[in-house]
Image (cartoon, rainbow, N blue to C red; front, side, top):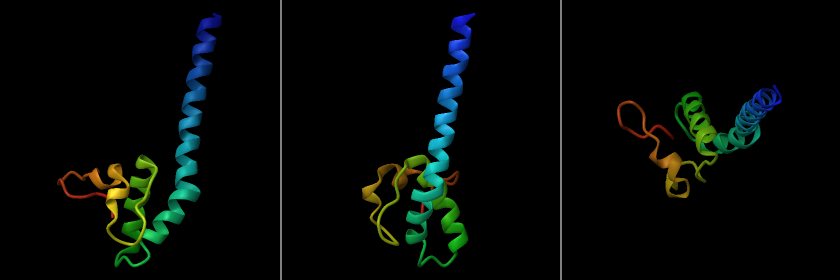
Length: 88
């Protein structure tokens, strides 16, 4: 009984921490980094959406408004279903 309760408690703790980390990444860090990254984008809404997705998965956004993807290999290597770069 105690082992089952401990396992459930541990699982809840792991799930809670992953959701907390994702929400923290999107809220402050990702939104400010993506706003800077997408500041000169023609389609700002689309840029912010995909930048936010990439940032939450990779936990980083390259500096500047274009290029510099070598600073974040995960961001650079993420691809969409067509095989092109997903992250702006």
